[in-house]
Length: 525
Image (cartoon, rainbow, N blue to C red; front, top):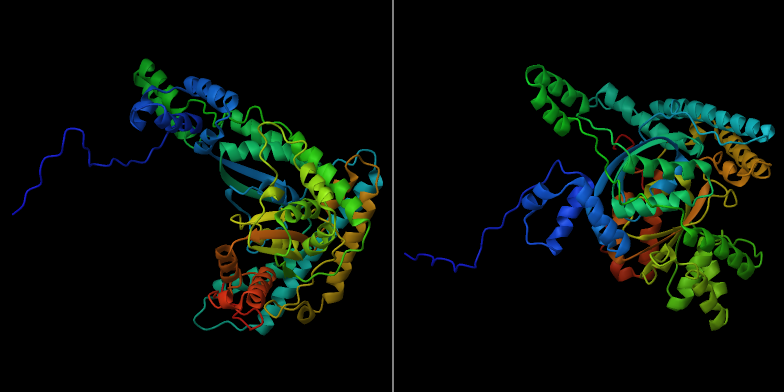
């Protein structure tokens, strides 16, 4: 029988692991940062740290010394309610973002309301805007009812399926079709949990946006982080404090300081967030250069998914990605034009993306280059919002425009609009909304071009370049092609797989994609 020898005096084999709860986000960030500067344990650090000391520390090390990783340690939860779908798309466009939003696949958006921009004295544009949005919502409601009726006629309820589950599933399938009619003005709500560094970047980006609603959203996020937070326990805590104070006023006062004190989640880390001059000036410059380089060429026809093979140098990719971001052309079309330019001109384009970069600015997302797989995807906005969640890849999204047309949901997965007898009505409403958008953009209000975007329905096509590695292409193709998914992104995921199969057949066999062209069980969700 063997016995273990006693450990040397300096040896410690007992790892201590414990969850931490109740510390304010910035205080907790300071406590974690102290591991690099102090031998104290987390318990000891939190016992001696106050919010004031945390603020002093962060002012020194975060703002003066630029140790931005400290802000990664402070996580803050937000509820963002009654913002437009347009604003929501911009808000969540962060590579380090966690959250959930109201689903257009499972909820009826008739009661959500919608956003109305300030048209100033342009009463005609405002009237057209209101008529267009109301018309889209009316079509959304009638389409939901018509498609639901067609589904009931086509899909019988299995005996083993409860009536309420059957009805709920068919309604979700009907929403899959009807959501194409929702305008970008539609109100939604979301929750997000982000670290303070991501929040700082997010606020700065929102404040730099041309839309007044989105700039206002940036200010509200900053105010929510630096001001008093809503405490879920305040009401219950106040009742406890009042009861304690009845018997012992002094103890009640102490309890009040603990249970009902005001908490500010990030009073220091985002207080200086301002519009990004780098982003705004570069965006304008790149749009100008893209117009010069493309010289008014017509937009070439492009497939839903184009896996652009790598034939260019890294310099050409960087320049092409910048111009893609500032234009409406496909990546392939831009890449081929840029590749034909002299090396000096390509270098100038790359430099334009860094010319206005400040001391603490990270390079723009367009500089995340070198991925093995580049999928240029052209799809409806509704389906894009689902693809937008894949943040392990680099996404370069172009602006919203009616130039690329729109999608008509006629997949065999859905109740065809033909079955419901409303194809022509659907197309009339979508085309009318896109025409109204063009008229609103020509109006006299200061933000006419931005206001016009709000009436674009989710059927409108949007282009986005997704750069990724093989593992992410495998993941998206498998997950998004599954039968429970929306037919829009199921088609995209299947086309991604097919593109890999054509270019890398030996690797495609390891992807478990579901054939989009095969019929599925509409009652499977």
